[in-house]
Image 1 (cartoon, helix red, strand yellow):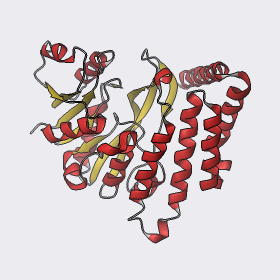
Image 2 (cartoon, one colour):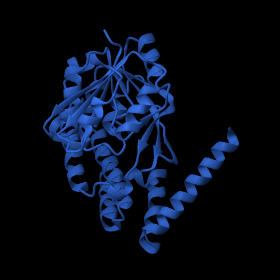
Image 3 (cartoon, helix red, strand yellow):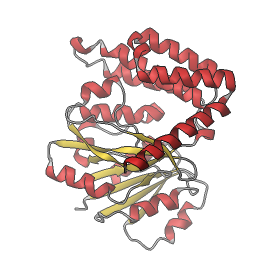
Image 4 (cartoon, helix red, strand yellow):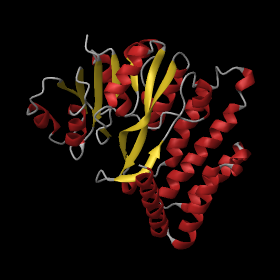
Length: 318
């Protein structure tokens, strides 16, 4: 049996897919297959894959059904003991798979091992932001309050987990990840490699503006999850609603939509008033004020200065 199956959903993804695949080929761990799921693309992905010499790469073609359906196709065709998902525009550090495989091999009780995530822009330049999570062990209580796996390209999961918890929900769009990791956390322990081993590409100019659809999907996940949550933990439901709304406020702010951002912030506080005292809320308030009175370009400049300062501090520490 192969050790790892790498599942790459691809829809008109040729702008970044060659670099993404190259980051897989550079892995220090080499016992893997790569399943590229062509989800109804109209670009030249088929011809491109034909020219790849490496026999570990396989192309599976299906009509366009969305990323969750593509991931499910990959799971159903996977031959590996472990499954890694990689979005067609993200990148991996060379030691990513090696460190995660070692973790799963040495800890049979763990079902999913995550990593820290570094953000990069459209040109693969680091933004200076590293998303860190320390959620490991029994993370179920944490993950039902807010997502702890922030990037679909970071986890490595035992294939047996999907046999027990099922496949991705195709109806949940961008919230299908959260729903899946909640289900995995309900039965398995999590681990984290506390290093940024994934580069998560940010497309600020093309970021989805349909926050209401995202809210609807997130609420569907929350409502479904809390149907089976014990009564003494039901208080987490309002916290979950609050955190979701605060996250959507950030999304609206990144899109330059201050009014909608203010609306989601208000909803967040109505659900979870303690957020008023959180650093995330305070930081968002500052960002919103800058954007509202000086424009989104001023906010981008402040964010760039902040990131450069963070990078310089990291360099000094190193």
